Length: 501
Image (tube, rainbow, N blue to C red; front, side, top):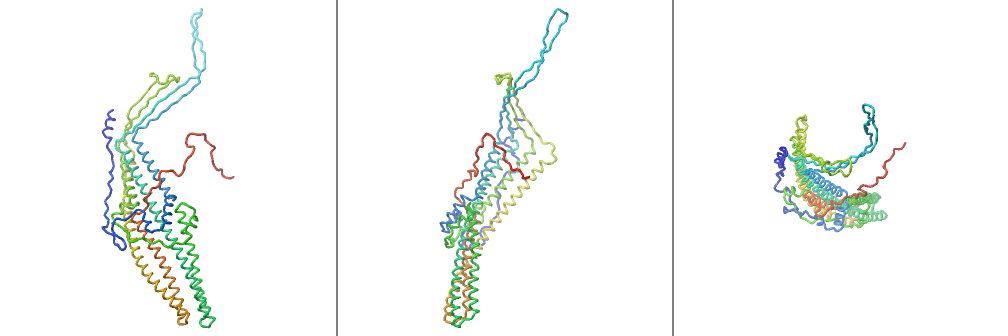
């Protein structure tokens, strides 16, 4: 009983380090603030600021149907079940056992007989019969958590739940960003395809003018061949753009959990490239420690690995468990429960690690090394998050400046094409001027469309870097596979596949 008393006194003891959230130094401000403000960022449903109802619909459908989200939800269920399993180790376990046995054997009976002769005689009679033995009882055991091994396991499992929740948030953040990016790219491809077709038709008109001038003797065959080749070159780029568009639609369909061609009809009608509402609120660098799910995930894993050190250290110390049982037995069912047939036992068991060739100490060092790895991973995730925001800020600022220059260039080249074509028709300009102006205008317009797509992509990247994602409900509790016939039921045939011989 002394061991039990000591165990009760030590019931609140726990070995190993207690986790404390690390304090990491972060910059006070972002290095680039062009086009953004330092007010707290708006992290909820940032894609609504692109003002595209179809995009909003696709984001919602993707959250509901994406397979990566469903997988992350299954990990949440796994983590919660692991927590309940760890908590169960803190309580006693009780099991019931019952048995019934019948035996057939031979018994020898001795019978004494008297007679007139001096002495006596005995006879042995062999008989056979069936005897029974019935037993019932309960076994119980309880391991005292002297040094907090089980409590550290519960602590680690609780951190595991947090980590699984953050992993789900990270998957949702990536999903929303990917859906938005692919949607914008699809609209960009549509706009570039339409531009290529318009340009090719315009170049066809130039080719017709050149053919008429050749018939009139005011143009050369070289001019006609060059005009024809330029229109053909522009058309040759359309299949490549159509391929890129189809691949983008296929990716977008798969992201929503549907077959690759499922969104083909829905996106067939071209729409303008979405334009973000600027400026964007970027907040302060320290905000990413709280808003980025990947950073929070790394921090929770660091906390979990810290708790596991205590689990390993507890194995270095003695362990005490209390076991007991009560049983009743008899040769007849009616004998069970009688006072004379009841037996019981109760007592503690003390286990002291004396020699294990350093295995237990090595396990502690392994846990400490794993904790250090998670701490370094946490630091790396913070640096990566800061870098992502800085990269997105620089890209967004510079791309907006580039887009303004390209817009000016496009306007100038459009004027040049109009003037050169007019002068060419009147015979006051060479075909080379028209050719150069048309080629330059097409290149500038195509670059401007690509720049608009990049601005939106940088806007998306900035929101992802800041930790903006899905803030709605996600069903992480409903299993994907619903089992049937899970209780005791007649077993079916063993299904297997024989190798062909």
